[in-house]
Length: 153
Image 1 (cartoon, rainbow, N blue to C red):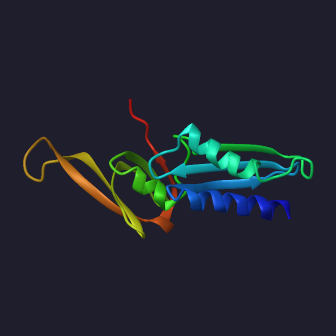
Image 2: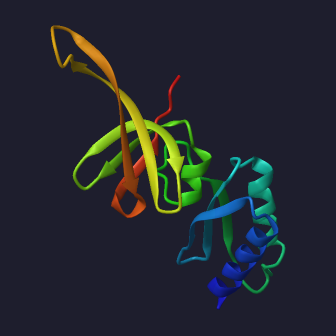
């Protein structure tokens, strides 16, 4: 009953702000509400406050004792939503699949797959020395075990 009420309030808040989307929602044993959101253009403190207020202001603390935590997805947290790939175009990702691990620049994110590009040094086909070759991989979302944005300084 309480979870349904919180879920409905959360869905209503996210309908009002279509630029925001849900990454994770949990309700602990002692009514500990934990919401993790992300946004197409990132998440500001004000965005977390908006979602927090939308939930908190519509619950009665006299009826239910609860704690509420609303936060943005961390920079080092794995990507879990297709919309997170689109907002990270041109950034370097490390993507694990069942058979390999690829680190490359995210150049495309469609509804079905992502495209990574990277450069590698390979021996010249003829003669001595090495040349830089551009590689590309298309990876279907269902083949991704884990994908993280690589933070570069």
